[in-house]
Length: 242
Image (cartoon, rainbow, N blue to C red):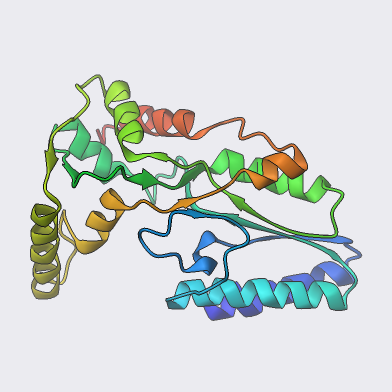
C-alpha cells in the first residue's frame, strides 16, 4: 500500500510536471483522519490521525503530493472520498447487506441513530472534473453524501419491494453476535455473516461533511446516493444475485 498510495503518488506528480501539467488533482481518502466510530461530524479541519496501514499510506501520499507539487510549482487539489460505491461485477458492493434486507433478516442495534458514509462513483468522477477546472492553487475537499442508516435501508427495501425493517435489538445482543463471529472467523479462517466490523458499520455515528466542495466550487452531487443505491439493487437483480 505504501508503494502505491505514497511513493506511487509522488512519482505521478513528477511525471505530470515533466509533461507540462499545471494542476494536479490527487484522490486520497477520508481514512487519513483516522476518525473513530462516534466522532460526530468530520470535516477538512480535523487533524490527521491515521490508525492503520492503509490510512497511514494515504496520509503519507497526501503529504508527498503536496511537497512534490510545491517543488514543481503545480497547483494541488486533494479530494478525500468516503466509501465509493457503484456497479462492479467483481466487488459487488453492499450485496450482502441487500440480501439480508431481501430475506427480511435485517435488524437495527441500539437506540442511537446510525449513519453511513457512501458516495457514488459517478459523483466522485464529477468531483475530479470540478477540481481539475477549479481556479484554486491549493485546497482539500471531503467528497461524501452521508445519510442515516435507516434511510439507506428503506431505499433498498423499497427497490426490492419488501417491507422496510423496523425491528431493533439491544446493542448487547449485537456485541455478543459480533464476538461469536470473530471467534468463528479465527477458528474457521473465513468471514462469517456477522463480525465486529459489521456491528461497527451498523452503529456508527461518524459523518464526513462533503459540503465544502459544493460551497467553494459550486459542485453538485448530481447523481446522488439514493440513485446509486437503487441502481445497484436493480443491477444485482438483473444478474440474479438478489
